[in-house]
Length: 431
Ligand SMILES: Cc1ncc(COP(=O)(O)O)c(C=O)c1O
Image (cartoon, rainbow, N blue to C red):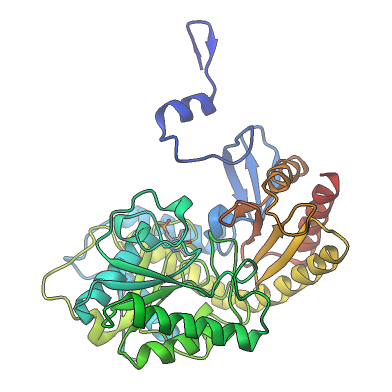
């Protein structure tokens, strides 16, 4: 657009009208216009292999006919009716999710986002336990709403210190820079359980409502504890009647490969679980699944006007059916293992890589400076630009911003993994 002889770009318009705290990727930001499978095209028709899927949200791929046709068919009939009326697709989706959740006697409530899902989980846990004390993990991220920024253990994503809760943060999820990092898996878990019990004794009034944890931390840079740690946490919590909320917004639907939900690597079942992102493949749908007596504990009415409306419920059902029919969890395990093995081999002769970690198609590469430990933010900024130039979209994360995050759609092929890896390797070598 040209105004008074000046060229105003879309980036200028974005920066003048959108909040300054809503950052864009890349020194020359791009607009993604269309997608197919695992590929997307920008405003100049440049094609990229997408290994970030709109923040782990494009789960089955772009323009999947089964999903698009379900949305189109529903859009022709009715977009919205509200929860005042029966919605068959919403009920069917809830039944399916309750069944998949592993939570006995589960009930489901749909929201529009992960933040709202966690908000609801907190409202349930604090009402059920009649306590406003919450435990959360350091380096966690649970959303952007008032209740979720105050339970997010990452100061760079927590713009307000005001909180409806008393929150205590415990160790465990991000091991690489933990004071317990040098310990074996078993000793690490023991140290984290001891820290949890100490926090409960020393820093709370005891009658805590819940602990919330991401089985693999998303925004935190795909940090994760040894398998089994959250099961040990749950044992300690259950001695005091404290509920466990598993935030599966990033880890759900088979993304971690070995399991359908991230919590399943820890040998226990949470009381409450939250989900969003991948379920709708881009449609705005999230939700909470909880034991029936917890879900039913509110003493007042509550609704979400849009949550699980006919359009998103139909699309999400089609997406979930596609995921199951095409065994995408198995694919995530297989392709993820291939990718992690290649990256681990690369790390052995690349001193700038401090750690390769992750599960299934949730893979982080942490970059360090010449001393082998200082977070190397500069390297990640350059790799972001270089991978873009070479045709690969990846994400960035970690408290210091020194982690490259990769989470392609779960339908990614072996050839695409190899192509993405080759681009990343070239980008790393170039810097
Ligand atoms: C683990 C986790 N929980 C909650 C959220 C918040 O979800 P939303 O952005 O849909 O509100 C996110 C978003 O990135 C997330 O990664």
